[in-house]
Image 1 (cartoon, rainbow, N blue to C red):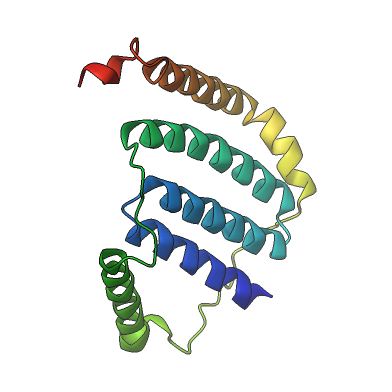
Image 2 (tube, rainbow, N blue to C red):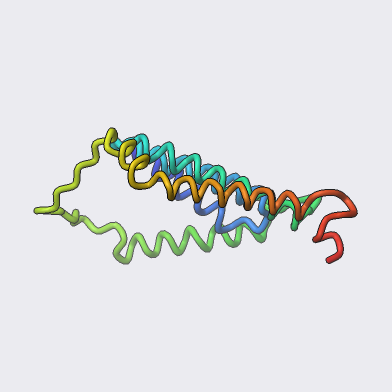
Length: 164
């Protein structure tokens, strides 16, 4: 299962890198964020995975709304178009070249003497004791950003970007 999650992560990142259209790139970003969180869940860090996924989805919603308002194209380019396929093949070849040159080494890095405890129940208490203020600040910043984007793209004639 972990190999499928990793392939989903790489496929989502390739979708983000190769698509000039924000619609399909945002879909790839959601897929890669989901695959990355599934990798974390497989490692036993389910609370951090849930928090990251919610933050990613909130941030991606703001970015997608802003980019979709800026680039309102009636026929967005998808993976079937020639330009996107050229980018996709180029990125896959670069990834394969990295894999052949040295990315797929047989040696496994061993951490000896490093005590890391990944108990998931520690994540909840740490998030609310030490990271609660930061979490509140980041949530407020995301809400403020959402309102700013909605104000920028609001209305047909009253929006700020309509004059551009």
